[in-house]
Length: 175
Image 1 (cartoon, rainbow, N blue to C red):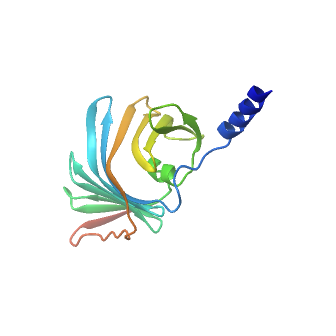
Image 2 (cartoon, rainbow, N blue to C red):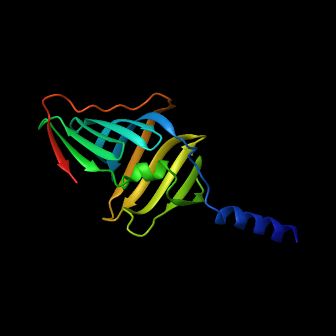
Image 3 (cartoon, rainbow, N blue to C red):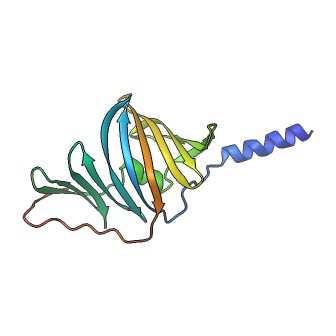
């Protein structure tokens, strides 16, 4: 009887999605992105209450920022900024805002698996947390590409995000 009760309670806990990121989630971190062992990019990310700024430093300098319903992609090589309507389809933005249903996944730290939604940009995603700090994310995108995102120097922050289009940059509005 005790085994049935413990099993039932475990089932209830497993069936309810857990919220892993406290809202508002405000952090800064260095991010390294690889695909099947090959380097893709690295940079720093700041995330504040659904807004973010991601400064890539390699393989080239680029800034991606989201604020007030707009997504800014700053390309320093061409000295231009393309402005999009932010449709909130950036994977990390949705993840940090708890938009995905989750289930626990066994690993040395606290891990969980994301359940993709219809039209999602990924097939499978696993997230590892060390306490309340994000350690890494492993995902398989819709093109079967394996992507590994490693977070380093993760720290909680409360400062505001500001993005200003640099002077003398061409602004391209892409609605």
